[in-house]
Image (cartoon, rainbow, N blue to C red; front, side, top):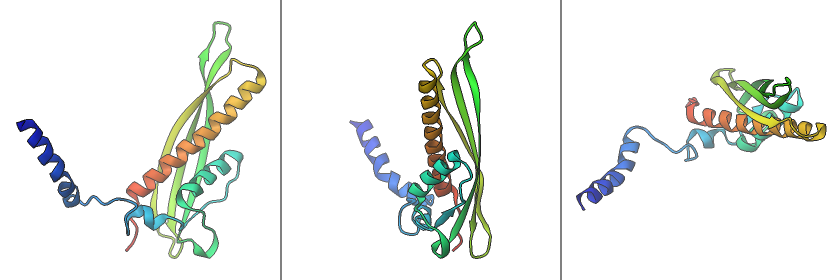
Length: 165
């Protein structure tokens, strides 16, 4: 019974503790998530992979171009493929695609850098089927990787961006 009271008190005090430490929901009015929604122009893609990344970022941040944007998000994507599983006859049966995105979020009005950083992750696919199956697996893995990187980048921006007042 005493342990139950302690748990209840702890749960009741949690919102007060979070408020005292400056915790604020990112999508609350004035939060960084709401402040970026529909106000970010993402740099133009220069490859199929970058196109997929930009498409995913625009879905998360809202698509904005031209005079309506307050911020410019410049992304530089680098991907490479690594063999992971090699048979005794030296055939690679599994590949990993590693992706790294370096980004810079700048304020369009004055060019000030608001946030910058890097996110990276990987996905894999099997190369044991036919050529068509392997190519489809690779394409799917690249699409999944761009979704993962866009999620990471958006989360990092929303969690760490320090918007000017």
